[in-house]
Image (tube, rainbow, N blue to C red; front, side):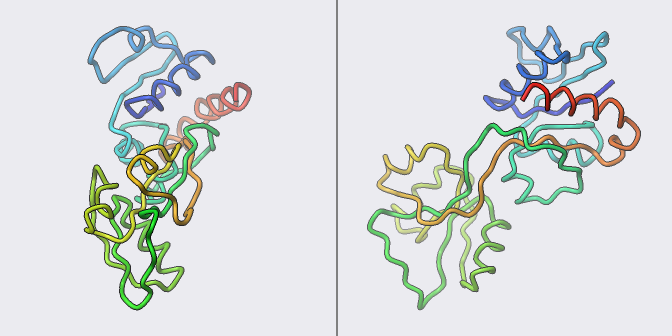
Length: 205
């Protein structure tokens, strides 16, 4: 049985449709229910639906053999897993955004709101820029509007939310897309099954 952790939401739905089309279908996944665990014994596949930021935990700890997660999460948490494949979708970017009239005062530490604390610290350390981080988990665009911080570091997909709140991208940090990851022990002991999955995905994508 290959155990696959999928992120709840649009990305997980997209990944499941692709996996179903290459032989990893599971009828229970297509029913209207609130279950989190789905199995197709005949296909030898079991799915779990988890919070996107938890996929790497299930994989790293061995509850899942493989999973799909955004590169942003891998950069932030640096889990001890194998990153097997860039799936090439779920594309966005991690970026610094600020109010449209923002002017940086380099004489004092930069105040940054983000949930990507580790990525932010590394990025600004590479620029030798002193910062003060304010960790926020939602409605992050409010921070510079209300004067809580100077800038934000966040995922930017279309930029619509920024534009509607009088903000714009100030600097790009790194491009992001969906990645297939594997538990290290699972890749050793279920290598044939995992390699078969990778091969089918490469043909499909």
